[in-house]
Every structure is written in C-alpha cells, then in structure tokens.
Image (cartoon, rainbow, N blue to C red; front, top):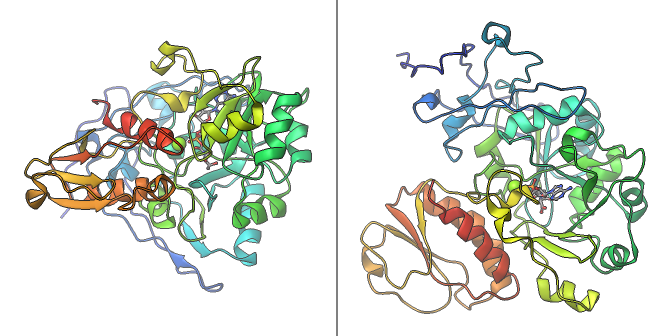
Length: 420
Ligand code: TXA
Ligand code: MG
C-alpha cells in the first residue's frame, strides 16, 4: 500500500521517491547494498540553501537531511524540478544509485580509482574512520559529495594524498609543519596549511579559505586507492552530516546506500575516532582532538598546542567547522558523566565499575572494561550506533578520563550530547 507523504516546504516540489535497487555484482565477490524501505522523511526533515564559493557551482543547493541517523533520511532529498522552485544550478542528490560494495583488494582499488576519475563517490577505510572520497580537483563531484552527505558547504574537506611530495603540491609547509608531517605521516593527523599557488584542490572543497587541510592516511586500502587514482582525494567521514562517524562498511551502507557509487569494505577500522587536526598557524593550534593524542604532538613540537578561541563552537563561522556544537549525534539523547542508570536508558560504560540501576538498563556496552582509552576510541562510534538502534530513552555515558585519546572521545561525546 503506498504511504502518504508529509507536505513539502512550500517552495519545493519533490520528484518521485524511487526505490533503491540492489545490484548483484557479477564478478569480484562483491555484495550489494540492501534496498531501503520507502520512508516518510519530511515529517522531521528540513532543507536549506547554500551559496557556494566555487565559480563552477555558484548556487549549489544542498539539502540537509534530518534526522540524520535514520535510514529513511535516504529519501530526504531527490527533487527533480529546481526550476519550478526558482532555483538554479541545482545540485541534486542522486537517490537511485546502485551502490556497489566490494571487498578490499586490487580489483576494488582499481574500481575505486576509475570511479573517482569519472567523478563518482567512493567510500573507503582509513585507520581513523571510513571516508567518502571524491576527486579533489573536480568541483562537480565535490558538490555531489556535499549533497550526498547533506553537509553544509561552508564546512571544508580534508584532501588525502599518498605521500609528502603530493602534499607539498597542495600546501605550503613551514619547518614546524614539516616536523609534524615527518613524525606522524602516514597516520591519524591532519595539517591545515596555506595553499600553494595553483593548488589543484577545488575551491568548493576548501570553502573559499586560503588554507587547506591535508592528511596522508596509513591504512593500506586508502593508500592503494590513492596510488591507483594518482591525485588528491577529498574525503569527509562517510556518514550523513552530523551523524555518528562510520567505523565499519555496514555503517556507511546504512547512511549512504543509494547516494554513492562504491563502498570498499576493508573491515573494522583501527583507531575509531577521526584524525587530530592541527592548524599550522603562527602558534600551532589543536583544531580538533582526534586519533593522535595532544601529548604526542606536543612532545615533537616542544611547545603546548594553542586552543581555538572560546567562541569557535558556535555554528556561524567555525574555524574548524567539524567543531560545530551538535555533531556525532545518535538519535537518542546522550547523558554524560552518568553515576547511575535510569530505567529504559542504555549505558555506555567505561572501566570495571558497576553503576546502580544497571539491571533496568535497556542495553549495556562497555567501551573498555580494562579502562584502555585506545580500545575505547576504537569502540566509541560503533557502540553508539548499536545502543541507539535499540531505541533507548537516552544513552547514559560513564565519565572518561581527559587524557590521551580520552580528549577526542570526550569531545565527540560532548557534541553528541548537545541538545538538538
Ligand atoms: O579521520 C579523518 O579526519 C576522516 C578521514 C576520512 O580522513 N575525515 C574527517 O573529515 O573526519 P570531516 O570532513 O568529517 O572533518 C574534517 C574537518 C572538519 O571539521 C573541517 O571543518 C576541517 O576538517 N577542515 C577542513 N579544512 C579546513 C581548513 N582549511 N581549516 C580548518 N579546518 C578545516
Ligand atoms: Mg565528519
């Protein structure tokens, strides 16, 4: 029986909602994305227009999908008559792509390189989280990437390259930036540096900034894809914008199936939180805590890292827009520093302690019974997704020490807990 669709915003006419078809690959042992169910997204959805600063896509219209954690968000966009709404240069989200899922290997790397070269979108593992890649020099592909994620175009992307020589074609490295690159690349570190003259990364990916974020991932699958492709690949985390980042190919599939061309499945990632971002400014600044601890970076630099100005977390003009206040959010509310569990809450535990009320919890997962912060980081996003899927009243989270990767874990949890 056809479902009723909720009313659209007045100025927008929606195209037909299409069923996502699964494709069974004939060779290579890939598996296909599952078809998603028809949905009634607009009940909770909203849309927005964003003017981009790229001359190729001056008026891209990107529609933000909410609730982002819902599979049905795959139907949040897919308008086919932008002219009717008075919109130009419309960048629509392709909703009916046949998302192919291939196991990592040479065939998958070659398929990924071909897809990127053709302007397609490819999700692949890095050691931090799965990324959603597009050719960094192709503004149209990047516009599709923003649209597929429902990501605001003021939030710039990280350019991924295979080696330092490629990084230096994009960004200018002073002595300190070079020192960090040599100490930690390839690895879970992103450096924000001034662009080179003639930097090949499209303006749309850098949101018009004169700096560019660069990372050399260590993951062998990411390395193989970058080498097979030959150019820089911009890659945000491969999730719907604002949702929990993906640490498994299945997480990518659940968020982006039907919106992207290919998922390369390289199994679970190792680090589990995104790269640490350092602004290589006059005073090196920790823009985002992540998979490389502050302590290790400061030990190499010999100076403490500066902090971004306190008002950076508002949504208007963020210095590192991944620092948006509400981010990494499951659907359930998140309650931090829990010392007990209320009936119907799920518990995200850390360490050996048993909290009062545990028996009445909707579900319990322990990030690390041994209190190991690296293990906790690797489990964080997957466990948040699993607990969220159980539909608890809220997710109560035990306190996590603010040291090592605990700084990144707490950062993500605070953003997940912001009232929406
Ligand atoms: O581990 C990671 O970093 C993953 C994997 C896929 O590499 N990527 C990732 O990308 O987390 P994304 O897009 O989710 O986060 C990139 C962050 C955003 O907060 C963005 O604002 C910031 O990098 N960024 C990018 N370019 C910047 C720039 N020029 N200046 C300051 N921040 C920048
Ligand atoms: Mg992200």
